[in-house]
Image (tube, rainbow, N blue to C red; front, side):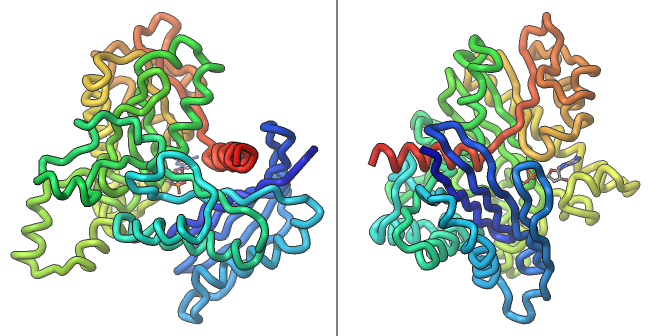
Length: 395
Ligand code: ADP
C-alpha cells in the first residue's frame, strides 16, 4: 500500500521539506519545497514532483519577530489540508548531532528528545533548529511517529585514532571527540556506488561533499573510516561562512590579544569566515566565480588547495585510492573546481576527462585512469525517508 513520508530538514536559516509517496522502499516525490532566508527575508516555495510551483510567498524580515517558529507554522498550515489524504506513515528529521550514543536512526520519544537537547552545546547553530522542527511536528501532527536521522551516525565506524584528540582522556569520555558530519549524504553515496561501479563500491574512495557546508569522507568498502570534520561542523575544509581547519592558537590569540569572548569567536568562525571572510564578496560560490575581485579568486584557490591536501591525507589513511566522488551544490555543478582538484591529483593516478567533466559526468576520468573520478548527486532527503521507513517498519 502507498504511504507518505514527510522529511524535514530544519537548518539554521532554512527549512527544507519533502513529501514522498512510498510503496515499500520505492519513493516518489509528491511535494517539495523550502523556506529560505529565515533571519533575513524569508521566502517560502512549494513545488510538485514535476517542479511546477504550487505556492510561493515572502514575508517581512525578523524584526517583526517572524523567525523559525513562524516559518514552521506557515509550513504546517500549507501541509495541513494536504497530508491526511496522503496517509502519513511517519516524519523523518535530519538531526545534525547524535553524540557518541546514537549510531542509527531512532524513533523519537521524550527520552530521546531530552538526550538530543543535551547535544546543543556540540552543535549550537544547527541542533536547536533541528529540535524545533521535531517539536513542531509533534505538536501539529500528534500521533504520527517522528524519526531522527543523524549526520554523525554514519561515522561511528571510525577507528579510535580517527575519533580522538590528543587531549587528556577525561575529555574524550565527556564527549570531546571527532564525530564527523554530512553522514546522511555519505551514506546515500555509499548506497548508490554499487550501481555505478560495483568494484569501486568495495574499494578505497574519497567523497567530497562540497556545498555551503563542506567536508570529505574516506570510505573503505562503503564504510566511513575518517572525515575532515571533527568535534563540530567547523573543522576541515573552508566553507561558505565557516573557517575550516584552524590552529587552536589563533583562538587563544583572539581571546588574549583581542579580548574576544566565546560568542564573538563563535560568530566569527561560523558566520563571518570561509568564502565570505576571505573574499569580502560573498559566501556563495556562484558570486565568487562571477566576481572580478582578486580576493574572490584567492578564496576559490584556497578551497581547491584544501580539497587536494585533504584528499592526500585521506588517501594515506585508506592505504591508497581507487576513486574520488564530487557531490553537493558545488561538487555537482562547478566543473572548474572539479577540474582543478582532479589536475592537482594527477600524481595520485587521476587521469582527468575534460569533456565528460563539462557534461557533469557521471565519470569524469578517462577509461584508463588508475583512480576514477565521478560526479554523483547526493540526496539526503531520500536517505532520511528510507531510514524512516526502516525504523518504523522494524519498530
Ligand atoms: P547546502 O545544502 O549546504 O545549503 P548546497 O549543497 O545547496 O548547500 O550548495 C550550495 C553551494 O553550491 C553554494 O555555494 C552555491 O553557490 C553552489 N552552487 C549550487 N549550484 C551552483 C551552480 N550551478 N554553479 C555554481 N555554484 C553552484
